[in-house]
Image 1 (cartoon, rainbow, N blue to C red):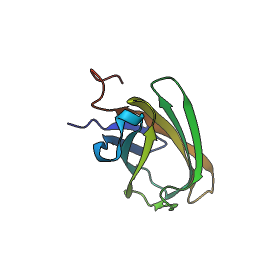
Image 2 (cartoon, helix red, strand yellow; image 1 turned 180 degrees about the vertical axis):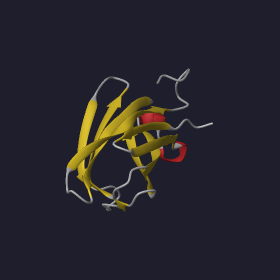
Image 3 (cartoon, rainbow, N blue to C red; image 1 turned 120 degrees about the vertical axis):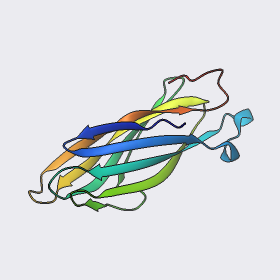
Image 4 (cartoon, rainbow, N blue to C red; image 1 turned 45 degrees about the horizontal axis):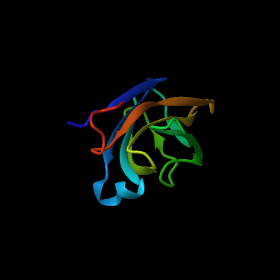
Length: 134
């Protein structure tokens, strides 16, 4: 069973599941690849829009890379109350494990107020480890 990591900020719930991609990884070359599926759900009463993202990607040696970008997968989705948005993306690492966390930079669709919502830290573990690390 694949664990879902969740966090709720200002009535916006973010759930993430990660998947190791054996077919895209080359452990002998220290190249390990994961996909992650994100679900963003508006549990609140006002529409919101995701404008930007910030990811912190940390490998098992403690090296962290911070990535900023517009939207997600080329979109800046608007979520009305009760709506959700899902997407899949991925990341490579040079180590067989790590983790990711981050923020989505949102805007309130009524007041225009900008705010951040947390993306929960989630594990990137491969079968090339003796046991689950994170």
